[in-house]
Structure formats: structure tokens, C-alpha cells
Image (cartoon, rainbow, N blue to C red; front, side, top):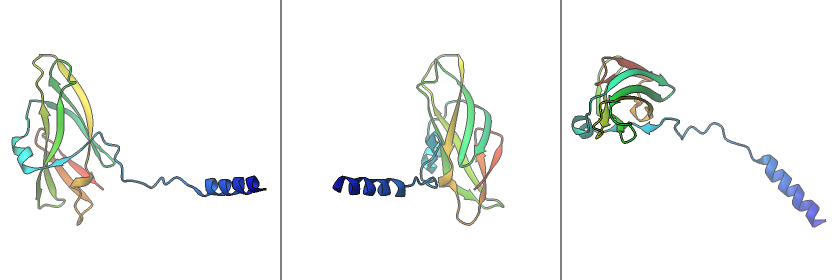
Length: 142
């Protein structure tokens, strides 16, 4: 008789659990964006060529190339200067930082995504991202 109640309670508990699909706390981006005026000015600045940029949800997708032996040791970061230029919409200043100690002449292409949620401003739902390594401004709507 007790076994019957045990299975009944276990079944009720199992059926009452549900998965929370609305959890947006995690990011699907490869890396976070760094906000630092010091790193923006003084961080690694190895040459790279931005081939393509796009925004997918809250991620900036950047396809770029640089010379190297394999690209495996590269350290790539998206750095925001921490300054918001007053415009409509506001403008944030960023750059792609590349630390590249590979001394080969081959050219490799990589693609990374960077989380943009830290760049959001409470008084607006869109900002221009001015990427210093690129001639483009890209509109981020959130």
C-alpha cells in the first residue's frame, strides 16, 4: 500500500515540473564585450582585416582575417571605449583587439561572436556601433 502512494507522489512531482524556456540569462555568443577605456587605447592591436559583420539577436558576428601560422593562439576581444556619443541613436566606440604572436605569412580567417547586452542603454532601444577597425557603423537594435 505504501509503495502505491510513493509512486503516486513521485508521478505527481514528475508531472508538475516544467522546463523554463524563457531563461535568457545565458548568452549564445562566443565572448563577452569588454568595456574599458584603458584597454581600448592600449590593448593588443595586431593587424587584421574585417571581412564581414552582422548582428544576430544580441551577438555581433565578426568574420576577419590575419596572418599567422594557424590562428589557434590568437587572443581576440571586442573592446568598448566606455564612451557614449550623443546622437540619435547614440554611438558607442569599439575596436577588435588582436594579440597575435604567430610569425608566419599565411592568412587565416576566423569568425567569432561577441555579446552586446552590456552595451545597451536604458533610455533607448538602439545604438550605432562604430568599429574602429572597420569603415562601417552597424545599428544594434534591442
